[in-house]
Image 1 (cartoon, rainbow, N blue to C red):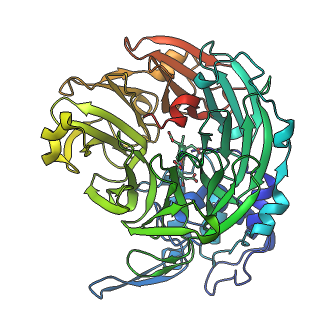
Image 2: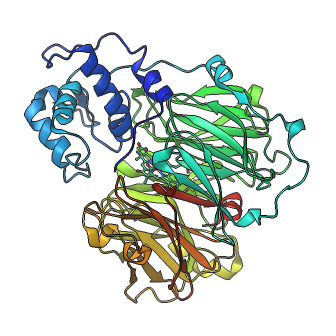
Length: 559
Ligand code: DHE
């Protein structure tokens, strides 16, 4: 997928102060300028999947040379040096069947050659980021005493959509009632997610460059009241939601350095950093276990912190942060995204390289199940609904297979007791038109399940959504041509339809449509009952809208 350049901070933090052992014996030589360019491209394009230290996660290990022994004692060896420049150039240019996308339309031939040489050299080690570094980066722009004491605008805040404009490093706040862009604010680069304060007054965003911003919706126009850096690469953030702790704390998860950070929820003042380095579920030390999804429990003063490379799920008790208690649950590698079941007792997270979903029981603090799925499950936060034959289920799509998997989830509700025998089993697999799904979504008031396919290489799949009738899943899904409905001109590049979000009342579904790199994008709004087009929200300022987070649904974890 295409991205514009990263913010200056992230790149300089990554490229500056790198480890010294860069030149690898036997590797193609590189000048200092080439090395700096390689480090920048690697961070922007490759680190998310392959890891900063190149030990592999969703993507393959890219160290110059590696050797490993499996549990049966079998030794295997490999590495980029063995593959060599010509082979690596081909992989980078054309991708692989294993899920690596092609970069021949993103990088020039020279850049591809440069990257093929760069990854045969020893990985750079970026600098650490301490509590002091966080403090130095902290900006309290509007202190609490200078903020409004009541809502100063007439917007229906609970139906506002916080929308990432990925390639401009901005967040658009869109009024869900009028569908007008209310205000656009500068944020971190390629904001990954937005999460809401327990009251719905504040929006917290985190950029891929590690910048967290806190936006107050009570001003006449939304206003950034504080910002801070978590490090140089991050993906997740959440507040404290348990009764009595509402918005007391904010937690942010780092990709680099691998750690989570606790901040004051009202000011973002940094309070504590906890490293996630340690042993994997296989008992091997890992220097870069990145923090993937984080979610706040509604039933305990706890966050569920999912550590990608170790396959450990941490339940972090924030009731006494000076004497922080962590329950560490072994699951499977590599943990990525996930969401609550409909009772909000179980958190289900994709262990994508193991083709499994791990479910943690936050009441008992134990692993509830490890469920086999198809290749590379990618749920977003998943989708919960009551299946006509199997009762409560949670759904995930897959990046690597044309299937949506429905997993039966437990409940104490006697109404669903008859479905207990199915719990934690895959009860149905819905066929899709192809692999490359990123997000599925439904709403408690809806009888539809929406699925996108933006990572599918075919135009007829990447530009659409499929909608399943939850009341009769034997019916073929309805194909919704989001690109066509947007009215935007056909371009050489695929216009990818990505991420769905419901309005507060569950009557509308909003889908982002990425135009080409230099083309306008849109958000296409559908009536969920009739599946008819309702509105196209577009504007020259609407550049690559990605995640959309409805204030009420995000605050209450409705999906
Ligand atoms: Fe995401 C969620 C990581 C690529 C859009 N993404 C998440 C989460 C993680 C993650 C850990 C869960 C956060 C949480 O709930 O606390 N994403 C990563 C990556 O590491 C990866 C593979 C590569 C990268 O370098 O970032 C990646 N993600 C993408 C994209 O290419 C997407 C489509 C566009 C973009 O932002 O660049 C993308 N990811 C999203 C969105 C969510 C998300 C919209 C939130 C979904 C939701 O409904 O909660």
